[in-house]
Image (cartoon, rainbow, N blue to C red):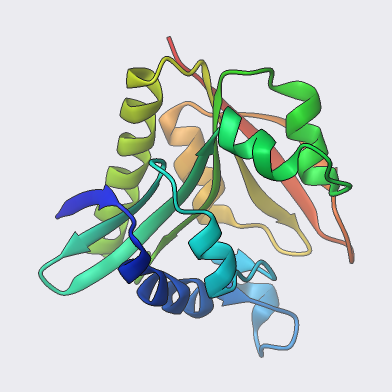
Length: 183
């Protein structure tokens, strides 16, 4: 497996992954899901505008199998400095000027052994790269209500993330805010 910076040519495949990982209230059985992106789609235009050194893909001989969409604090502030969105305001108000924000981390077939290995490798890449860039924290969200993204929360706790707070965003959605402090 190769983890590399996402390019313009990767946007279509990443969009397919984002779409495949969506969980929404219109789906049958959505309340039983324990992983996925709860009502958090991204358009190809949004993915294109997010291309930066912290947006990476995990590629195997079968193609792109996962991605981590991250922004360092400078890129994040450039996008969200004047936002009204509670989840982004929370980050702006609480994390200073030295962090990596992981907006989405998605893996095809997360429940398989290969999928879990890809997810772990992407998290390891985020930690390593944040350290190499002198960042002090990694910040991420996981959906807690109306469904708990149990897989993401479990993966973050195993890696040493701590839960800081719940952030109410819209339509009854509550995101748990998690931080990993780099040493």
